[in-house]
Image (cartoon, rainbow over all chains, first blue to last red; front, side, top):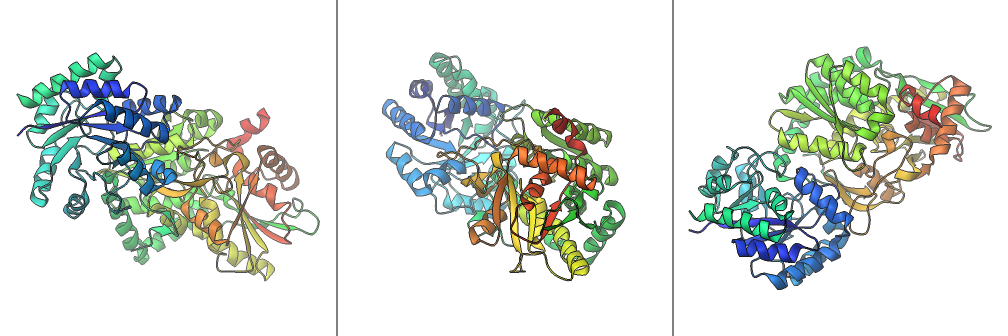
Length: 232
Length: 372
């Protein structure tokens, strides 16, 4: 079965064009970062991108506009990824409604574990530290697929694919039949292919942002290499 | 289970990776508090290592006509501030949980020094995150932490103060959660930290209540403490919350009034009253006092504000400095700039007998004060 390739982009003026490039390169789903000033789950690359986006005025309403413009350019599902403080300020239900109206398929909230606001429909995250009970709870409430955080740590490149991924996938398979996509610390084609040997999909964030710094052409080539590695 | 919320505040707004560690912390805390040997060990160390009980001192020359001011002298604790009460309790808990590596954040450096101290005392590895701006203005505490064997890591992004140091300590914890205990310094953060810190600091209020009844045969009209994250305040207030006749007053820095001018937002794992803009982005705090220079506040303070049981006011940098000089010149006590905010407001409260939490001593602030 074809592995799902998820690419993360930060909201900004260039995002619709970058998303189109990622889609052309073979991305199946795009996560769209809505930047937060104090992102606890993020490593240096996404943090820097968030700081830049905020400095350019990418606040919630402009991120939603960016989402709508991106929706007009690409066919793949778009999923905003953000932090609880933005939803708290905007209104939890209103945020979800307006994101969907702007073309989002779902939401990811990095600092909202499954037992906080369980009524908010979203893609749930599980980690190597999650108990079986929590994986079951998250899988039962998740919106379409489960986000497997491969490492205890923040987003960003690692030298090796986390050894915690295989056992986490194995546990999750026993507990649920929802698709499992692995993210955090997957930056190279080799790591993507290795993760896809276990998981149903891979999520590439920081490395995609670095590629996107060199423009849509560079991003498309980077995504195409990931796609080729997953399909080979 | 201990309650995870204070009305609509508190909770656990953290990446999933940390939730099992918070569950472990909560059950470890419940076991510890149910175990008389934990309490006994803490009491013995409090007495012989920290120097408890700290005195309640009548500042007769500092007060003004018709207003008597009592100081709860947490500045006389070992390491020079109330922070050691919490650090000692949490280090005993960390040992019960089998953790050998401790991470902490620090603003003014007092919590960092307290953490480095207890890590030295128990032979544990200690990493302290501190904003580079705070390292500049609290140089002596950086040197003290290093002498105590701590690895002090400069945080070089954002505001370069306590907010970023806290984020970085939490990121370290996420990354090393299997081996590491996060020793948070204030009554902030995800559940159960605000409760643990309040319980460990409530020794201040318990002692103060007993002492004032002993020396004055009555309760104070008001208790006053400075509020940054709010740990010394919550500890002092805890002793008087059930005494309906006692006014409870928290004093924030005017440029960091999370309770005065903040709004509900999520920062560092909890929903509280936070300095944030319309979009939920956290805004910068400004205070001469590094320990109050924080855009968030403990969720229980937000709850006490909403319920009306406590009132929260502000003092400016200049008012704090004036109170610093006044206490030095009238009583021979150099307060830290943080409780100098509480001292400033205590002088103009409409109350006859006022108990002030003197949470720390001012040695660390000499350069700041002399600069002005």
